Length: 115
Image 1: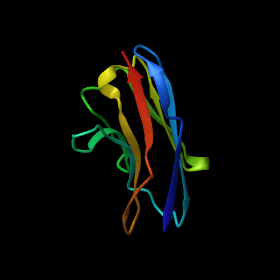
Image 2 (image 1 turned 120 degrees about the vertical axis):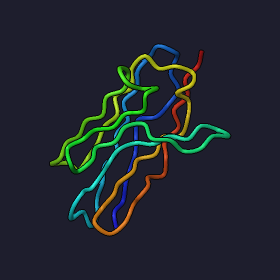
Image 3 (image 1 turned 135 degrees about the horizontal axis):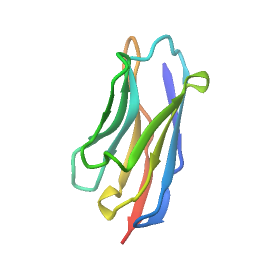
Image 4 (image 1 turned 30 degrees about the vertical axis):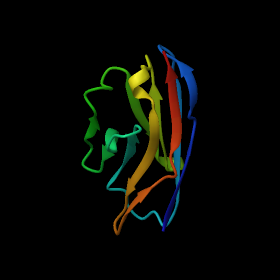
């Protein structure tokens, strides 16, 4: 089992910044992917940013140039630096981890951007 603990969500004005963190612990033998999804009210969960084991990093078109995903391998932690936030970025942000045997989700952290 892998546990994911997220932090860093909150309320911010449009144009502001937030930094999310996700720390993974437990039976981490390999990481095939790790990153962030989000789900706004009434919408499907969507990819925000994701590290893949092949070295590729994917971003949603809507966040390119504004969000940056980074990681600290020693701490099994990924970060999402969110800049120039917009009202449409309001959502619950979920950490996502793909191990050798299963996919895991964090509990989610609310990000609210006021316009």
